[in-house]
Image (cartoon, rainbow, N blue to C red; front, side, top):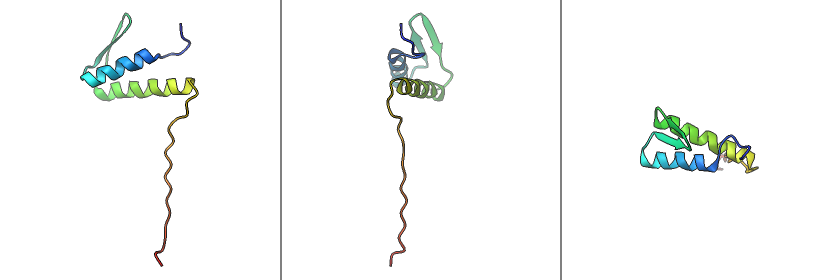
Amino acid sequence: MSDLPYTHEQLQALRKALARGERRVSFGDRLVEYRSVDELLAAIREIEAALAGTEGLPRRVRRLRVTTNKGF
């Protein structure tokens, strides 16, 4: 058994449910029904972040570089 609070199988099940437009997802013997697509997306993001953090994967970092020029 894994020490992770979430598994890749759970993440995959959530993604499949989202792709099919379903809000009910079963994990083994448990059935979870999400109230909205936003709630389902939040669950997916939470699991992705947890798995990325435990696997030592770098999180996405957005960098925005602003440069200005007077045009002269």
